[in-house]
Length: 420
Image (cartoon, rainbow, N blue to C red; front, side, top):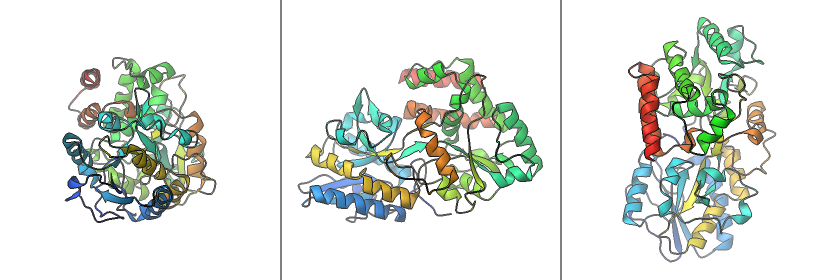
């Protein structure tokens, strides 16, 4: 499998495509007349070259005399390095962010972009993940969602109908037992980084919480004592108790070990992504499009309706210390321009934030995913702060190992969430 960068947990090592910055010297990068510095964890990857070429060409039309330098940082150090830059009040002019808590926790260091991106609002989706208190702080590049992929060949081996995956939790658990008898695990799970629970929370959220509970969660009115909220963590624990997950989940890296388990046919399902790794195009390298299925989450709470959880995935923001916010905002816009995002979709397979891109030739899995975008809802975990997500990751490992109870988990998460 091609090793790709990911917004979640992959080490990205690379030099800038323009200029020669690196992680070791990039802390000294500051804006200067006629130059903009960009930090990200994508630009060192081969699949990003055509995307960046298109973006730089678009920007050069507007600002031919402005030099742009991309500095690819290692992802596992990215937010630490960015935090140091914010503390010092100097650093890159434009920076890449994950949607959700990572950017919302740092908006005091960013320029609101609403006055600059008004023309892009209709063409691009995913803005909400980069917004706080009614202001937008990044231009979205990708949409990030959490579809459940499954291997139709394993279904056939287990005498299950690959065209009709289970629609209820009880039936799904029964199907997993049949899959185990046929020699495969039900889920490929990597939770070494504690990220697996984020995917679980969002993928299973719409079929476990009522619609009112879901909307309240996204709005920040979370009832951690709700029986349905507890049920989300109980089903997570159940997968461990019933040995539905791949062996050693807490010591397996999600990126890219868990996805490799799925691709190699050792597990029937994986909660994957819509971005540039752990997604349909990656899996098609080993599973033909006809063998790769996308299923809706099985219903846990009667009366709920499965929906695809998705938000803005990654987007470029502008630092407050940049000397010319408009020029820097123009660069962020070029990085989300139509031609650039078409190249990103074509080469990386990511579901881009540009809703005008034609994906009709991508195969049945991506057609299913895109077809669900209209009725999709924001992902539950994206609404949480980065501090609460870190705690949830640690507690999720303890749930799988049996060293903590669900009641203890929701109590700790409630305290963290309420602390802000």
